[in-house]
Length: 382
View 1: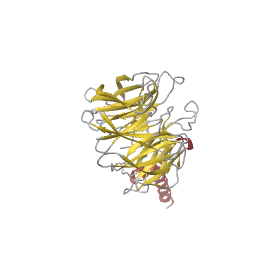
View 2: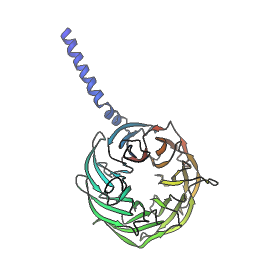
View 3: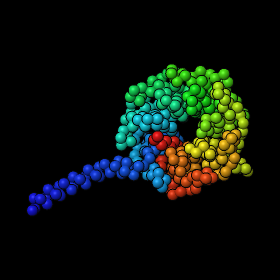
View 4: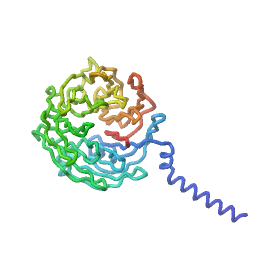
């Protein structure tokens, strides 16, 4: 009887150890949690206000919108923008480095493991400094990196193991004044739009998806108001309208897109409420999955501005401004089902959670903000 009891104790102990070892992974799968990779500014040799150690994971419960911390999964300097591949197998991250930090900025490629940890598969120069944005074409075969310092965009091709090889380097007009802040690819995969903040231009390229090459469009650029500073660029749900968030004058520009990829400016609207005169820089912009609403972040006013999208013209009508409950919301993300918005408050080390009213687009503060070190990019797995 004593021997049986000892054997049973050993079995129970082993079972308990096994469950404890894998409990995090199993729980996440059983609860159908969404995985988020978070780009950051890092401490010490990194950004002046950086607090993080690198890229870390978060898990979102789609039932109630709550977040929980996962783990730091890659320790690199200033991974300020991260992007998951369309097949969820790989993750790409810039290392935002300046002239005094390294010979150039870098882009890292990682394999995403079943437990959401990362295995590095490559590291390439971005041929300039302060890489700040990553985009992919609609096939997922080509990756575009924007370098803020030097006005350089680099096109890479994804290899079989998820690592990258360089295909093309685009030098914008003047490396002293050009600031490439983002690349956006049209839904038909035929056109690329580069937000050149320093020259107040949206640069337009035709994209050859067979060869992975960019060539200037017949309309090579559209010039915005002097001092606008276009930063990020996105499309309406039907891809007939485009929107630019302009960092320097805190505005949003609305464009019509024709069949050749050319742009026509149809509206400018402020991202700030009337009467606000303090310092502000606009940052991020996203269209709701329903196509009915658009959101933009303000650093200084520390808010998310909400707009209704006119279904016929694509023009914007202001709906209101919601505090992000923190400082410097550089980036934000919408949950895949469009039920929640998550704002990364870089300078207060928090991510705030908001429910989205599906009828009117209103943002409703939800739960307590999650403590998270220097979050500057929120990327859901697809």
